[in-house]
Length: 253
Length: 131
Image (cartoon, rainbow over all chains, first blue to last red; front, side, top):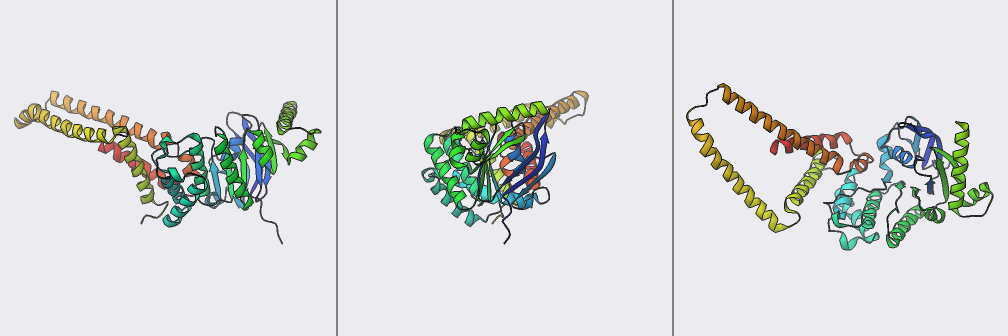
């Protein structure tokens, strides 16, 4: 029996703006995995995720989502991907229900089905008391939950989250984490960037560390600890790996 | 019923956002202010018609001669309207394409970006003409 295609397969991906931001990246994320992508500011995390979501064209390399080449069939790839940015866009003038029905429409989900899924997600994320209020007065946590519901409404196979927990209070962060855990348990793949290393440590099955657009280390927390040769926190591992990777790249340059 | 992702569906979405934006802008969320503004617009239209009947009607009744001063006046009027329409178009484009910040969401979906841009560009043109 053949293995399922990886949820994400990246080969030789590169992108430069005024300087190289992503440099010949190789990355594979298995289907049903919770993968955390870590890196200092400017490491290229957001650019990589934007290229996977089809928002930024790569300069070179290939991206394949569940076996679909994003360059050959971008629409098919977009059908199974959801993207939530660090500054989620939710229309001020729409209610969460209206917003979710709109997002469902973007994925060509029929109106009746969209309404059913919107009600289900709103209940699941604890937004039911605010379902018919316009989002303009919502807190950052509520907006993030609405955006997350928007990402789930078309039942994607790959969810890409860029700093999803930034600025959330403990309660909202817990709710978002619980939803993501349930999605992973049901076979969905989640790729997340975060600066909250404790979240990556607790939730991610594998962690990738980026520096200057390159993957400098990857593995489970235990594998990363083995690599640096001491039993310590992810924060220490991350700082050691980034310093080591940056030194190596500077020497190579 | 409109098919999700179709031109009419995008147009409905744009119309709903534009209407709610405009209504919120003129009323600041207060129903009474909406009534006051509607009355103000009626009074304003009446005042313009009154001014036209006092200043322009006698002139038009005598017959407009295409002399130099008339042509300068018409050209100046046309230029004024053109600048107002241009500023309105720029404001509409900024609002529709940038201020809403929804392009990442829409462009990361399988919906046709071409349809969205066609609707937004058309809406900008119609709004500019109307205003």
